[in-house]
Structures are given as structure tokens and as C-alpha cells.
Image (cartoon, rainbow, N blue to C red; front, side, top):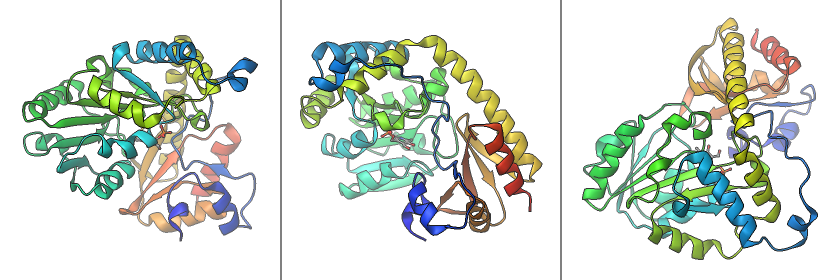
Length: 330
Ligand SMILES: Cc1ncc(COP(=O)(O)O)c(C=O)c1O
């Protein structure tokens, strides 16, 4: 099996690998909201002209208000993935403690920068010894949550030694109460935000870095003059200002997640973690269940670090949910 298939989001490869699977394929391999923000019409000028400073500021203001982060601590980016890759070029820790399991690109980025990596399920315990602590809150893939007060205590401990706390809040739009964005701008605290997941618009490529001024300056130089496209700025400004959609969406996702849990449990699976955009189930033989689902045109996420876990995103409609339920029944 190729790495792409083991990971999520490679539906074209799945079609090739399982040509006899019934269609349409149901892609539950990512944790992206299946009911995207209704973007509406975007002014032609957003496509036609280079992005203006005013458009950038409108989006930045909407984001900072939605996150509760100080405006001056925010820098916009084309998604948070790029930031993960650029960060090791901006700060130079020797020893980096990274939550494990978590989104794999964190470890990959620090490793390729030559840092010593400690992958641990207790990264905050290393605030007194590591030069940087990296975690996701809530975590992908297991949905683990970290109390913001505990995070800020660790941040202070790290700051006292010149260390860094890096919090990836890619899924924090689901649970604003978990965010430490209000502390944005404090020396030694770096926060990453992603637009694509909660708003269901991963293709727009929008994210943000919340960090103290020297980090913003350095990354801003690397990102260049027009890091985010005009349409992305217009969509982001609109979506982050729309609090009513955000509140309704949180309720809708919570309800859908409860429904998915019922389906998974009815099929005899143990739901052992996740958040309102995806669930983690434990099963005797993850590889064979993954294959069985793939043969039925359903794509879920496997992990290289576990033979027993699968991650399953929210089905978009009752037909998909029924196909999942049928496919799970041996
Ligand atoms: C925890 C986490 N952080 C960051 C990213 C990168 O997302 P994006 O570049 O779309 O902001 C992902 C994508 O899956 C993720 O799961």
C-alpha cells in the first residue's frame, strides 16, 4: 500500500486501487466539515487584482475577533501546513517535545530541521527540559483536549528558560473555550489556526499564525507580499464574521457526531476518541476493516502507528450514513 492510501485525502488513488468499488465513493478520510460555509458571490475584483492591504486587514480583523486574539498578533497564511514547515527556520530549538500521536507533519518538520525530537503523550511535563513543546488542541487524531490554564502554566515555565510553546489550533473553531489565542503576542507562545476544517473549505488555503512581533516579522518576510489570494481573503472575512453560522454549525456537528457514534457502536466498534469532526474507533484488525470499507467505496483513515485504530469523518447525508452502517455490518 502506498503512503498516500494510508493517509487521507487521496480519493483519486483509492479509485484506482479499488476499481470495482461501488460509486460514488464516500470520503470519510479527512476531518473536514461536510457542510461547507456557503461562500456566496465573490466580487470579480478579488480575482482580477492583486490582493489589497484593505482586503487583508478585513480578513485579519474578522479572524482576530473570532479567535479573541489581539489584532497585532496575527499574520495570515495560505493554510497552516506551510507555517508548520517554515517554523523551524524561524526559531531554532535543539530539543523539541511533540505530542504523540498527533498530526505527523509537526515531527517531520522539526526532524528535517535537525532537531532532537521527543515524541511523548505528556509533552507539557517536558516544559522544564525541552526547548519547545508542540501539541494540537484539540488533538488530531485522538481528539485529546488540553486545559488552556495548564497550557499557559507550561508556557510560562518554557518562557523562563527561553523555550517555546507551539499550539496547533487547527480544530479549535469547534471548541473556542480551548483556545489560548487571547494570549497571542506573548513572547514564546506560537499558535496556528486553520480555516479549512471547521468551515469545510480546505481548498481555499487560509490560516493564521498568532505570535510575538519578531516571529511575525520573520515569517511575513518568508511568506512574501501577497501570501493569501484575494478570493481567500474575501471568503475568510465573510465566514469569520458570520457568528450565527458558526454557532449553528457547532450544534450541527455535535449532533452529527452523536449520530455517527450510534452507527459505529451499533456495528460493534469502540469509539475511543475524536472530536465533532471525526471519530477514532478501535477494532481488532484495522487493516482488514479499512480494506472491507474500501471495497464498498468508503474511504477512512488508517495509521502507521496502530493496527487497531481507524479515523472516520462525518458522513454528509443519510444515504452515506446508511452505506457506512451496511458496510460495517459483516
Ligand atoms: C492538526 C492539523 N494541523 C494543521 C493541518 C494543516 O491544515 P491546513 O494547511 O489546511 O491549515 C492539519 C491538516 O489536516 C491538521 O490536521
